[in-house]
Amino acid sequence: MSAPIVGLTTFRTLSSYGFHMLSLTEAYVQALNKAGASPVLVPLGLNENALTSLVNRLDGLLFTGGGDVHPERYGSAAHPKVSQVDEDRDRVEIQLLQQALSKRLPVMGICRGLQLINVGLGGSLYEDILDQHPGGEKHDYYPGYPRNYLAHLVEVQAGSRIAGVLGNGSVEVNSLHHQGIRRLGSGLKVTAVAPDGVIEAVELEDYPFGLAVQWHPEWLSEHLAMRSLFEAFVEAARSAVHA
Image (tube, rainbow, N blue to C red; front, side, top):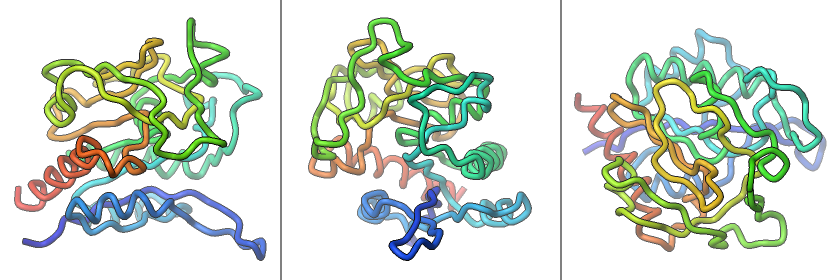
């Protein structure tokens, strides 16, 4: 059986020579590959026609982590904690999301990916959890912590898709973000929360497979439950191939 082709969004960096590069942390690629997918990196800077042509060749799409979504995308003002904004990345990813949803492709979001999906569906964000979320606790366990540091528990909603993967009850996760969902986007439902009430997972309602988490399961490959998240996503992409 052929491996499903899963696209992964990328971000811009500068090389040691000062050249602009399109990059992605290898852990995403390895997590998908081990789950049985053929990962491909989706470059930034493409126009809508090029993105459409690319999406038509994909079996699934993973929205990865990275810098903050521009506050103007969700009708908010600048905040001193907002950083690493790339407006072209916002444009590309929102267009990818719209096209993927129109094709009903399996989609998954991780960290920024959850936030991007929420904004793309009309939701908004806390620009900084500690500053704006009532009773918000520390979620930015970086730098100075290993990427697989289990920072806190999340409570998983019974009967949700993610509960079917992780199990009901609580699960320990890492935490590498300072923003989170403020107003939930259209068509999304909350399926996991942190002890301080920050939304940690959402799912698309009435959709074949649409799931996003605020933590980084790609850094938690030693945990069966986190590997199972990628396996469930890849299986959905494989089913899309043969639909």
